[in-house]
Image (cartoon, rainbow, N blue to C red; front, side, top):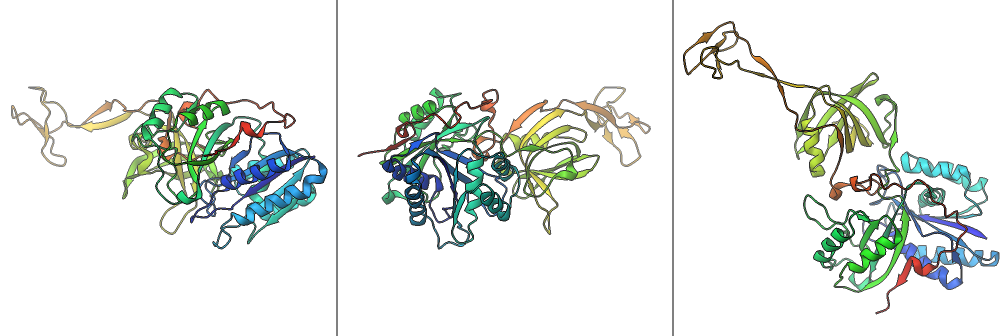
Length: 449
């Protein structure tokens, strides 16, 4: 039997982690003697959904097992989810889906919509019934949606890998203790093979989360070999319980979809949208930069937040008439603000001329003249020449930016955002086909200390 097990929404802001639940399930399934036919899949869904927790990641385990083991597999998965979900927290709604056989195209389409848009529970349940899958949900059961989407995203195109190392339970909630210098050394040695380990602008270590969850650190890279090698370079001052290598859509821009016009920008959708800059960017309290673009269907605000680093500086340099593409999530309108794109990237396609008005030069001595008042002309304070009929000069100013793609620094990137370092490294296909057996110890390790 080929079996796909998808699950989601076991964690809460108080703690927990669905990838850690996956690690525990892998251990239980290995004990049952199942065979794994893919790396565990970590699928990030639409990051703009308001009811998500943190990174909005769903998990899928793909296995082969004897038909007679199906009941035991299902029981073990449900038990681990029940024992490791924050069920008392309002908004934690775990769910699991069990699908036998090949993944139908309709399930794949559902997954794409869950990554790039909004899907409904009733649609998920309809698909589950149609293909004879089984689903188990707790509280509102919203995790069923993520579980089905994780099954449907088979990562046949671009994908990356992430090795996540987990802490022992007694250390959960305490400051993480790793040698930051070893992370920076690893980052230099593994350049091009791993990404987003260290923020280049601030020097901040990015592989460690800050919450009370079980994750010690996560290393992202192009191959399972690369992330395992990077992990071996990191020095930890606290024991590691286990680690898992996931195959994932991190750093692939899988969430972004190109839309034809501003009119088509729907709330919560991650979009790529082209337009011409209108007016001058504004800096609002907090240091955030707001600029506006237009096309033949309308206008829309675009926001680059203070932590956007270089991207924020690029936004400040835009002028009216610049042709740009913006990449980001559409925030719905509120009482105070219109519908806005929260910008992740800006692709400057064409720069308009930047013209400024300057006081004229004195025709006698060549010095810059001063205005004598509205409609009164100009006066040279050096030689005393008066020019009542002189006007301000139009001067073309050199732009501080050039056409090209600009991305927020890694410290403010979303999980799905493709960093500049990955451009040109995209994977076009995945030939695994869910038929080859992958030894569990190639992606999962219980550290014995």
